[in-house]
Image (cartoon, rainbow, N blue to C red; front, side, top):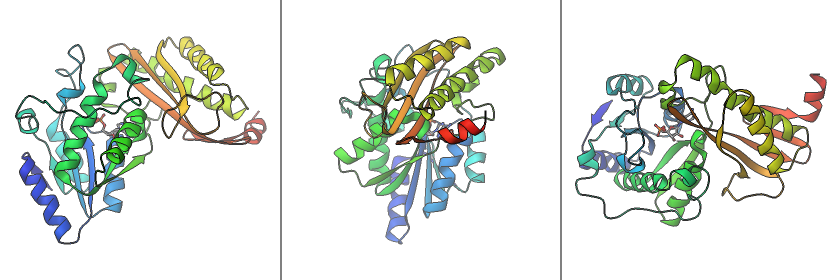
Amino acid sequence: MIVVDRVAELRDRCDAARRSGQTVGLVPTMGYLHEGHRSLIRAARADRDLVVTTIFVNPLQFAPDEDLAGYPRDLSADTAAAEAEGVDVLFAPSVPEMYPEPTLTTVHAAGLTEGLCGATRPTHFDGVTTVVAKLFSIVGPCTAYFGRKDFQQLVVVRRMAADLNLPVEVVGCPLVREPDGIAMSSRNAYLSPEDRERATGIFAALRRAADAVAFGERDPGRVRDLVEEEGARHGIDFEYVEARRAADLAPLDTLDGDVVVAVAATVGDARLIDNVTMQIAGAEVFTDLGVITVAEQESNR
Ligand code: AMP
């Protein structure tokens, strides 16, 4: 594995790989790598010849009152993890390397970035789309792997790439959870043992949503109420609970087809996001918490 901290060198290596007929897979991250990140790297490793992983805590996507300074970092552990997963090029630039001048040009995906996390983080997604557009420009034609953990981010990045005709295929990968159901996140490092226990309530609340839909609930407002109720039982006060169409985050009157129930909650010092995706086809409901059918539920009673 080669560790690169210069934009020009990363560009040259990706260009050279393509010239010799290789495909390129890109996994952008902010580091402090865990199994969620590693699953994206494994997907890239399985599909593509040259695997590039980037580690950059992007100041542009943090508001002044957010956790930029304290964001967990461990480049030597990340280097070992990337190497163990078979990454070819680890790109870990400095802030001045990525932003040599104050940024005058940003990328804004209208609409998609206004609700959910965008409601309380109004500048966040512009920071994400701007840095991801820069990475796509530097790396060039490739397949880029993003986690469904950050569901709104995935939808926004996919739309940005399409709108701007960027030569990048955006692939969404499954959300990876801890054994107790908590979504893996670098920010879980902020949780005290008590908060960590409380945070399992987020998963319990999403399970409640999945179970309700499996039993035939199709009213998004009712599903939101159930999630909030289950969260409250665990001491979780959700910042938002939204049941939306998965493809474009459009609000729904009735839950049908591909749906995401997305939530955010602050637990102790950590703002956590999580979601469950569901494919609803008649009475049958598939979720990424496992396949649930009404028949199965009833036979388990
Ligand atoms: P981050 O370092 O938090 O910016 O995340 C980098 C990439 O890893 C994003 O595409 C995330 O969606 C993805 N990711 C983070 N946590 C998980 C997880 N628990 N499961 C799957 N993907 C994840």
